[in-house]
Image (cartoon, rainbow, N blue to C red):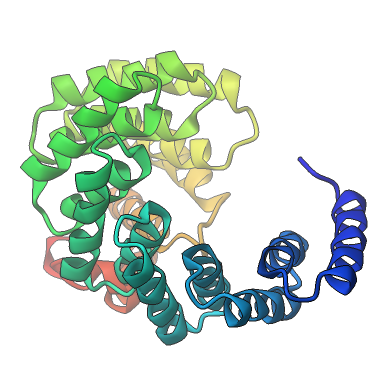
Length: 309
């Protein structure tokens, strides 16, 4: 990784080159890249603009200009300049992919799919596109298409562990616990220090009531991640499943997940149910109410039925 001091040195060299060749659009482009690397977005923007002013048929310049606008949250300009880059070069994968990501972030999924598919027409083995398209299909519940994307990734790069986790998640949602677990374990084989795969295994074992396997996985995870607060959540859930409700409450009360609403909702409802089991009804109602309030306010969970809790 290039250090900040090296980038600044590079900037000075480029500025000298620009003085000697003020009409060379490439130097302005590289200067924009350098400023972008040290988060000087205003100066990056200025130099990218200069590069495309000097060469109005420079798709790379328009692509990077669009990326800066994206980073500045000016999505309208970002889309405009990505499309300008694509118009200049319809097979420009970076711009097509980046525009797919912008539309994905805007939740304009049909447009996102359109641009991702254009990338795959040019390069059917483009892993980043396959991965994001798979995530998008999963989000809109086109599970078969999502699985095709993730499975294709594993044929291209057998070490791409995110694909195995994503395959496992889809299989688990479809009730195929056995094969979901196999995929999570494959991801762990690739990287034993990947906590996401442990979280996924906990979900699989909890949903299928495999408490013994849940406990074994918990012990392995505690050795790997002794100070990880997520493990207190899973330990609290484990004691709840073992009907040791006071122990469950102890661990669940030691943590919170304010910045991760879905996880915090889970913690609140397990606390509510644990207090209910030891007949502390007021406490139970307090946590059920908090959980319902957070569920109602969370964009991604508005479709959940609160009554089921």
